[in-house]
Length: 457
Image 1 (tube, rainbow, N blue to C red):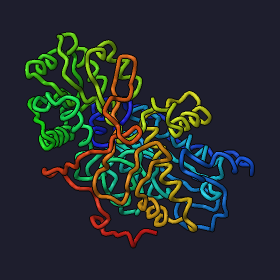
Image 2: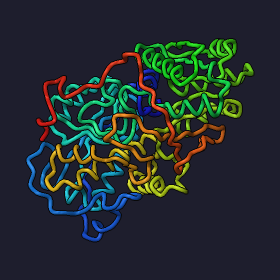
Image 3: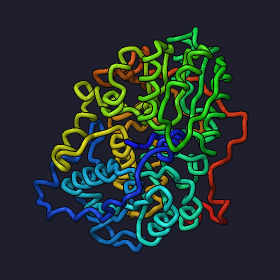
Image 4: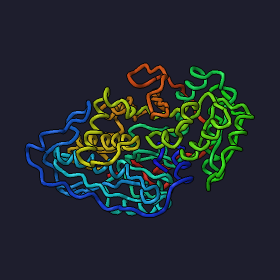
């Protein structure tokens, strides 16, 4: 497992791969004392002005807040996945923010809450006792802790939201991401099925890891493809424990004449499947590798197969890392990593985490008195949040999915922006709306635990 995808496929990738040895989960060290000169520099991020800075913080009695610190939790599965992206992003952002003066003079202190895949509830309960909020993280099985989070009135500003119970849940402010009850890739799939490869629309295949969670996701994709004018003509499952020989699956895909392939699983397995497809001389029009594969490892694993196979991924309208030379915000993240976490890789999840941190920081900065109510309400007022240029505008006040999307393509030399005819900078903003007709569950609410927003302090 290299990383977790924002949205539904997250769970698949984490459940089907990964290891269980624990790695470090200590709080990030306090920043060194600041000088007034340091506090006056570097407070802007992209197009966002004065994200962090000095100030005269009022005394506070809110949990996690002292006169000079704000403690926040960073949910992660680092002990299972061995991927430190959320932890790294927390270190980089808070170090930069604290050097600029903190949040009105208070330092941000991130504490990693390592769920290790299955211990989500335990980590949320720990956060409930000590943290002001959860920021910039995520867990594959995040719905396991959502009821406890709502009971203790703990706001969440996640980098990702994965499961149905968590997506769209109360007291959760997503900088950009899935919308409860809607297919999150409607624009991307409309482009694949209608614009780029119209001949593939009636010959879509879905192959997924064999788990209860994945089967629900496969049903969602099948429904959405049909709702967008296509048809899933091939379905298959592969063992969660892995496959020693992908040739039989490749032959089945060829026999069914699949022209568009949806792969719901871990990208090392996808790389092996594509090598098998190439070996038997079969090339679908397109393969949705999903954003879990977006990074340098997948092209390395797939190798020469990517000279034949056409892989795409949608990034939730996030600016691709490859756009750094044209996108000052992406370049700024890269520069900050080089300064505060040299040697650590900037990844797609790290960009998503930065968006979450920026949403939290800008909301908190404008609170004369720092309270959970103030920060949450400020965040949810955003109608065109761009994280300083890291993403397309996102309306947190809307209950409908965003119109914009970004598509990247994998090649043997690495990832690049796809030719998907963007119409607003790096994004295309004509996504249709597809609302699920099937009952796949609903997000958790404050009312479901006997609470309301009036209980928030």
